[in-house]
Image 1 (spheres, protein in one colour):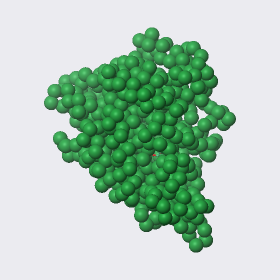
Image 2 (cartoon, rainbow, N blue to C red; image 1 turned 90 degrees about the horizontal axis):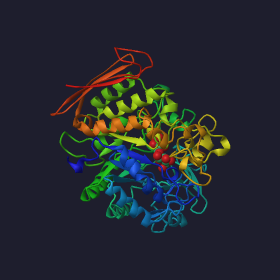
Image 3 (cartoon, rainbow, N blue to C red; image 1 turned 180 degrees about the vertical axis):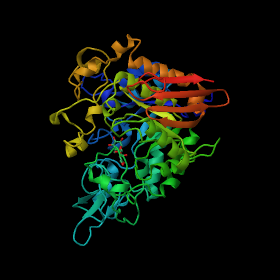
Image 4 (tube, rainbow, N blue to C red; image 1 turned 60 degrees about the vertical axis):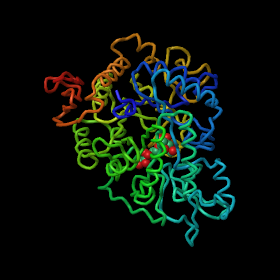
Length: 514
Ligand code: ISL
């Protein structure tokens, strides 16, 4: 097997470090805990782990606000812990991908402290600063995803700065070459440590329109399904100018050139419901037999929202992909640390959770699994007082935020599910204990065993990893398609309903070779 190509058709297991395994008894997971649980991850048969941010951070957005890109936050451990983790992962045959949050830093990053100190310091234009309009209001109508204007007034500089997320996440100015260089140097630091790849947080937010033009309104007819909740005004505006700018492509080529010197790969999180497919092709498009010059895989949002996932929807997504992004390489996910767990989102019985797993594993592209989905965990129900996520606190109760998918992993039936010896930062729901790893290991019919089987199936069939995909059709609840390469052809038929259909049992997925 070509190991340089491990990512292509590979399966990546996402770890949210705060909630995986605590070894220090402070109620927060840590790197030593991840290392301790790596044999479990390897036993699933996945190719890689993607670890959400563990860098030094004031944790306003739980690590997606970095104040030192080269440091490990003490709550997660030390650099020695990270070195051990990488070594252990490699011993187990797992690749390690880390989460680079380059679009913005924390407002506590020394770069921002310097930038905000005056209008003429060496880092004055490392962030996106602008004068107010004559009436004192922000320079344009851009909105923050987490609520309110994307501009925050700074009393010292008497200017606004841009933030697409929290006010404590100021946007780095990629139009400034020095910023690009500093981020590339930082990336090389991690490459030298031996990381195998990067998940690029909000990769399409790196550049904003240099003229700061107003975003046009978004007509209701043009609104697409989005993981951002309907209550969020961000959804009612087009994002023509605040993200997804063409200048990004040249930067990504610089970035990719560096990665390829180390044989490393990237998966870019492209959040743009208006131009998703076009961006997919621009970022990851590579003609047959060639590698992308920019990003290897693009993390696709299509299966992360909505009240259900029908056969028709899956067929439509692939038809669109074939039409608009035929040379791209998608990376699919059903759940992650930002959205409601799919078992709850689509109200799935156990059989259905297994069926969607099989379908996911049979799709063309790479796959990200989110910790706990292999246990069939439902979304945790939390009280307002238990919330930690500022996004949820802002939009409660219409949108309950992202804490419900971030509760701790459940390993056994003991106190706190074996996650921690003391009170975890988010509660372990009682119903999750019944789905703990130990119980499912002992039950051959469990969701966990099903995931292991499906992952193994993909490993054993080159057509599932790298083959073409064709003849995808939906007929009521029935989805059918073929995967084929020189070695084999697989016919896949899935009944995505709780009634018998087309000769298939409820939620049955049939895979026939030949
Ligand atoms: O752009 C979006 C919708 O159109 C969002 O879904 C966006 O892509 C998403 O919120 C980005 O999430 C990532 O960056 C955030 C962080 O809070 C999330 O946890 C992370 O996954 C800011 O760094």
